[in-house]
Length: 319
Ligand code: ACO
Image (cartoon, rainbow, N blue to C red; front, top):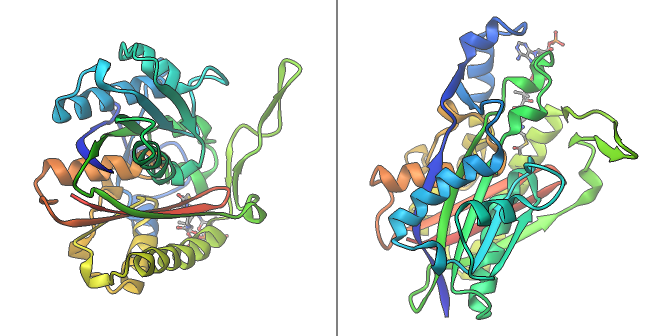
């Protein structure tokens, strides 16, 4: 038994914030942001729009493409770093908003920007173990809520959005393999310290990032994990038809593609329009490439991501 993606969907909040808009908020320029990151604009959730609302719209679109109804879904995993609230999980909130009453499991996956590949791997294992048949796997973030709009080194890089896939049991291979890693020794490089205790927030609720350290670490581990995965599957770089990377930064993506010997026309890019939407970025990019007809049946698609923790991983699938 295997699992296959049978539908994708995504959603971006209506409000667009361009680099030129940011010039009016913080001491920066479009050229600085675009040259360093490849980002031109990002979407920002409205005040009352929560992560589960973004996830809901993306999920409905994925369900429509897949032709599945709420009663077909027996597993919901939401990868997010920006849950609606401490608990219940955003996955339980989404399950309710979608009207899923099947009694299957719903839970969140917290692996920051790596969350979607962790969630997809988990859903694949559930399905192959026979514990679920039709899974809704979502990456959704309202990450701009963690930004200090006075900190130009971080606030220009991130955006809000959600992507979703329906993963279903299949006799034909879809997910071909996955490789995941975490190393908590690097937890100080990218973090939001805030803790809630005794009725108050302790520590900074804003994101902190050592940008240069993240950059070097990301380029190194992304190429390594792809090598590991391909070696496991006895495949080579030439077998990859499409790379759908986490959309953090065009320079990280280009450096990784170069190490993997992939030309940039095999790389799906949305970073210019979306910015870094953390766990949302891969399913958003995947949906755009599927709906535009870039990714075709039978092609091999490589997903890879790295995020705070540090965590990193790759999934190879056959479309
Ligand atoms: N606008 C203008 N100037 C800025 C800005 C800004 N938005 N931000 C920083 N600067 C200034 C700095 O203050 C510094 O000025 P100084 O030389 O007078 O001190 C100068 O620009 C250079 O700063 P650096 O931090 O050295 O800039 P760098 O070239 O390293 O680029 C960046 C910074 C874009 C963050 C880079 O390190 C990077 O891409 N890192 C990866 C970060 C990333 O992608 N994180 C994603 C989250 S993790 C994930 O998803 C995996």
